[in-house]
Image (cartoon, rainbow, N blue to C red):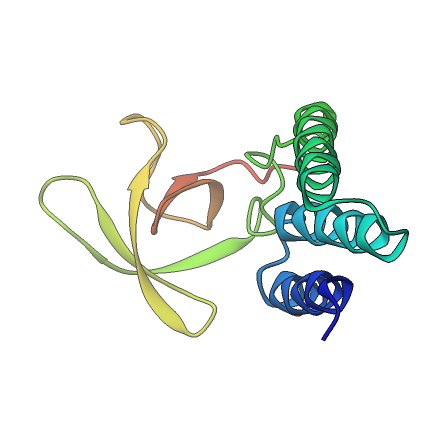
Length: 139
């Protein structure tokens, strides 16, 4: 078999793996392998195939990192749970609570100590697997 077939097969395998991971880095490497395959198909020597593939991989990785750094990754306020009411099942002695929300019991704590415990409480924040409660419904 010709060497370009190996380059293209490796590129196809990496594209398949990229579909599983979704990080785009394997896609960059797959494109680099395809460039190596095109170089082999054009009759260039193995050194040029490797150099072109490496340069493409490095350049693609740099471009991908720059693109990812410009994307907004602020997901702290993106929670769809904020502002929704919860039902308090039990208050603990340390001020925390067990609340019923979305069909399950969750650990919860008050946003501040002066919040009244009676009445409807709303989710102010999600910290890990615990809910932070407030008496004000947030928008």
